Amino acid sequence: MEVTGTIKQVLNVEQGTSKAGKEWKKLNFILETKDGEYTNTICFDVFGEEKVDNFVKFNNVGDNVTVSFNVSSREYNEKWYTQTSAWMVKKNTSEAKLEEAKDDLPF
Image (cartoon, rainbow, N blue to C red; front, side, top):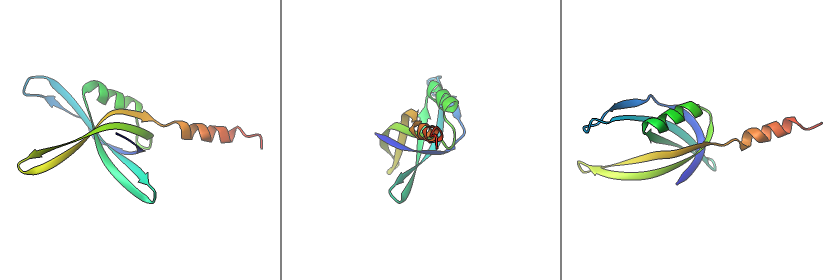
């Protein structure tokens, strides 16, 4: 699945060690999307050291991005929990290019 929106918040990186002794790293970020007159807010997680490091390096609050993600739900103690896991985040640069093109007009 894909959704486009603006990064509104990047939460602190979480890290630890699994029961198997492997280190893990996770980051959550908040994306705001517009659907007509309605605004939706989605919390995504990025899991894995390389993915987290790349996200932090290339993305900032206020960036317009397209997020490719998976949605999964699981049951625990008769309650259901849904997770939105981002596996790719791409910056949308077409808006910036349009602004640059407007500045180049001779009049």
